[in-house]
Image 1 (tube, rainbow, N blue to C red):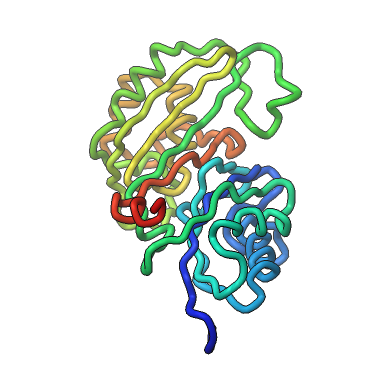
Image 2: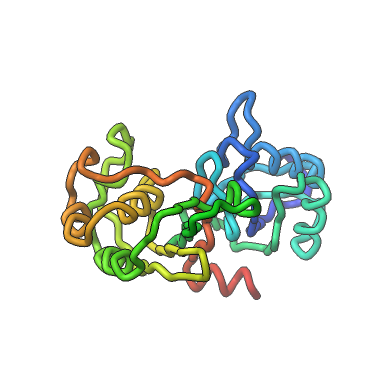
Length: 256
């Protein structure tokens, strides 16, 4: 950033509707969440910023209610005013919910200790005019008890090869799931899951498989079966990145 005021690290909590974006990561010729956030940072921090990082690189169509980004900034709006200032430069489908000073060395991705997602299924015969792009419409009856039994197999350490694309670049397919559950909220079924980290398309493929599998078959799949034995990948528009966890020391420093 050159000479001048020392850089400081901001932690940004971000909400966005993924329907209008080609995912988080900046790509030439595509509208992305990272792209519009970079434009806003250029406006609010014209004296310099760098090292923008994000906790989870969401795919095209995936939403976020608690995405976290970190960025080094110089001068410009203080943390107490950063969310308000950035929102004046962001489009309506992205909002910075909070901005906080973070400790030196804080990194949105590498400092994270866990992530939580929610997948929403609209389970009724009639489609919704209001849920378009925000939930998966499933007009056929679903057995909540069966889904809950499937989810009960997830907590713990498992090999999730069956739930990520066969051409995945991951080298390790073992993940530790902390919690997983299905709940009914009126016409909607919500699947929530928390883990140390996730494989590419993992949550969506878990959902797609549970919707169409018996508990016995699902239990077999979470023990490292190949992708071709897994089920369909649910569409992105029902998925929400809800929360990112950090070490207590990071949170205490950020929250004062």
